[in-house]
Image (tube, rainbow, N blue to C red):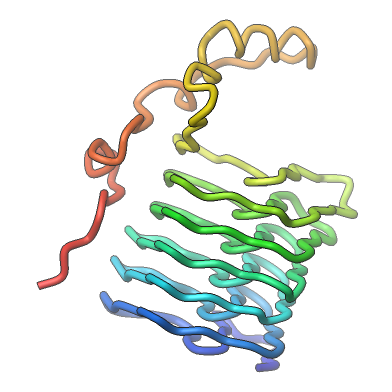
Length: 219
């Protein structure tokens, strides 16, 4: 797939405009796009579900580029999915699995392969930019690099915006005030817990109150 000016480019789905379910699908090859470019789906939205899917595609785009999904939003649900082998390269919002995740729940997902951010912020091994979303039981083994002077680069998530939740199973109190104060002192910045420490769902059953589903039930 090679679409220079597309809004939503994916090997299987370019853009979803309805509540759909994608199960047991995969993609291989090369996907090149502009905005919202993913190895399997470009723009995945409107309460759509993706389960048991993977991609080995080499993916390159500009804004919101992911190994599996370029941009997921509007109550999307992704479970038991992964991206491996192929490299992922983009500008702002580049992730090994999802480039930009807004109001999205990820569970039991992982990534391998190179993730490269070229000239924008938000480059992550699993998710590039993570906003109003939650990640559970997931990991990344991607080498992550960002050649931009505006980096926001992370092994799991590059940039966290607004209230999002990434539970730390081995250190449950990592996001305590003590750690926040210590981090602020070490970095010499006026870091405040703000919304990142309050009102964030601590367990899957609390996700619905934050506008993110626990587990969708199809009729």
